[in-house]
Image 1 (cartoon, rainbow, N blue to C red):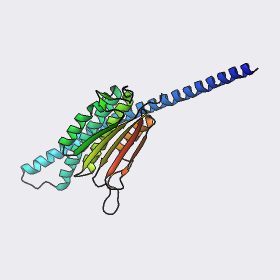
Image 2: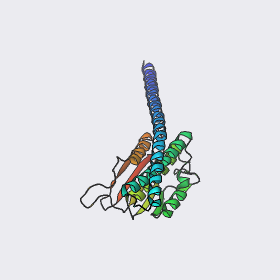
Image 3: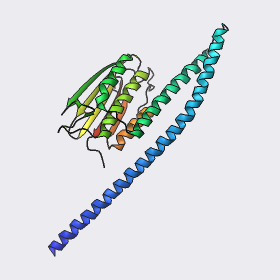
Image 4: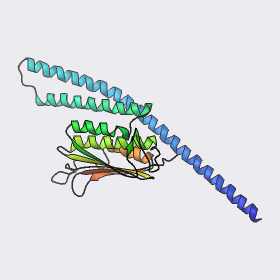
Length: 252
């Protein structure tokens, strides 16, 4: 009787584990379908917006050229339209390149961190990088304490978080400096980017979004999909901080 009861318990536990596995599989499939639909919509928006903005830029450029050719003062509003259109087109091209790389197999990772930091420094932002913990960064990926390569999803997410955080510093923090800290443990990779630029105005108004900007939304989605945590906001001592904790063992 006791043996029969133990067999029944083992069978029940196996059934429960199968149910949990099936539920996780359904959730992952639903997340993949949702991501694919978001990418499709983003591409369609990019195509339509790029065309419209390109037309605006061309028309504004022609108007500026004609005004200068006639020796007339160019209206400031027209110059602002030309500048804003050019910047919007550039950001759309950047967004599309990220979407394409994500869809076709994003090969970016922490192995490209040095090149990223070099480009950011060349643009005028002072950046320092510190790596601590069980290991450093090797090859195209980081490694766990046991010397095993990071899962590709974690490697890519860590790189994209640093990339987006440093881009935000360049755009919003003015004449600031930034520091990147990667801390490896066998279970978690911590990614932290701090800067000393202004995060709030003199009257306390936030100058940079604490989790609501499109870049930060993308970061949060990446981290959440991996079962990690993301914090972003002004630091107590001034400046802004982005911190992500990424589990090395990705949820299946």
